[in-house]
Image (tube, rainbow, N blue to C red; front, side, top):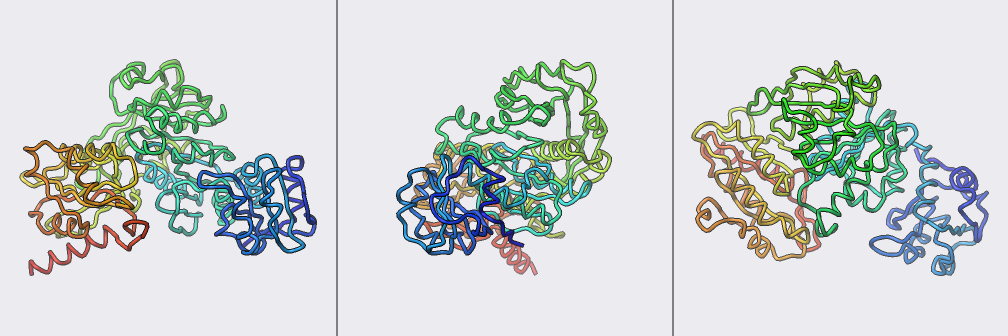
Length: 542
């Protein structure tokens, strides 16, 4: 239900000394929504005309007023906002920082949900969606309803809707978190992208547990260098309060960057068995020794086609004689546990989610039992085959070289002797071009055969993108590659030409139900294409 609050009351509670009422009567103005996107403005909206990456919000004031805005907040001296015609009862406001003040008003309107939810934030190149989804699942099983904000969906604890961005903007976040509280959620798991951190979208949130998964080459079209990319991720940890918790992957060289200026209590995860913690940090190139309070080691005991067993060990960090009392509950996670996921990356994802759930108050024994009922999110090594199919087919979102390596390594143990692992890959247009040849290199290293096709070409020539991908292969490897620019045809080739026992991984788009060609989003779903191909294969065998 929309909240309606007096604008004067909102200002008094959220920013009493930061806003100047230029015209209109804030006492009689009722606000139901706070928006900084004129396309989402409706009746009862306070429109925040803020500077942004894509343009100046003052240019959209007229559109917002026409759409029903009852108040406009702009920067001081914003002539465009002040001069725009509007109804006589329109309230015009000015402030030094429209985005920050607008976010404060949005959070106040939403009932300050950031103070009523226990927040878990997940960042890293790969694994964010899986970890955040697993956190939501485990918390819901143990504490109560849990919201989710991520690449695939936004879930308020009762229902989910498709997401537009991995991490929404500050004003939209306020509204989303408010809906979670209204739905009865007690916690929320958030994927936090490097773009979001660079643009300060989570600045207003008190993250209780921050998780770092890994850092590999991606988004260099935006950040420019890996150093800048890592620095953006590290902002999440630099902003944690001392009572918060930082859960980091010690096997990634960027772990030290995440912890360098982090005041929070730190928990390090590693798959390295029998190695002193100081050596873990040294081998990873990260100076973590003096900051990690608890070490959580994990290893895969058994791996099957669709599940695995992992062993978890919990011990004090290098400078602690014992596990600190505040973190003692983590010790109850120790022991063997079976999970219905495969791959080293999913072992980390599951353990990180379990640690986070315990840190925000879940019972460790409940979490251990809950791990056995986990399900990976849509498009993350999603099995599409049915029992009795002679070939197994997975759809995954892997769109970097590291992610491709991980998913292929995850399914390789389940490939029968004498059978082949087949990868379908493509690279997106108008994005980081440096990773294109590396993606093919990773596919050739991990798979027996590779089908190179189109992903989301956007405004680039699809065949030119494939040309760049193909530079990752040596001339003598071309016999292992099929080039097919039509994505549906490429998927059908992989599925229909597979021999019994073969395993096919269709990588790149995962959960996306579209393909972007030019500026148009055309309906396209890898899972549906695979299902049709499997149906045709079954029909041809009868």
